Image (cartoon, rainbow, N blue to C red; front, side):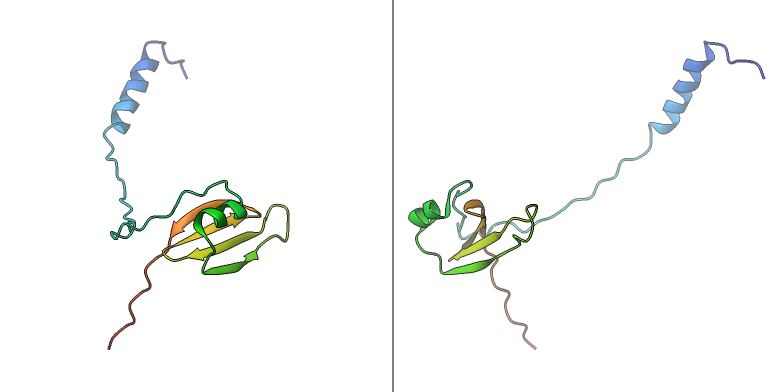
Length: 109
């Protein structure tokens, strides 16, 4: 077999590029439930200690026990539930405050 001349290599690359280029592009749209329209929002607490969160927001309505903590790679995660939002802690530091979902209406028959 004879070697391809140096001028035909760029031509071959151009032909391959033109056959691949017109392929259609597709994308999906992800729709997410937005925050409640009532103006409820979670306060910014990231990085604060439990004592600082308690001083700023007061006592939570419910303190859930820690989960995890069985290994160094799985630190204990604690949740404090307030009316309208929940604060998540890793050890003693706040990770996030998240707006609570509205309770689903009971099914009617």
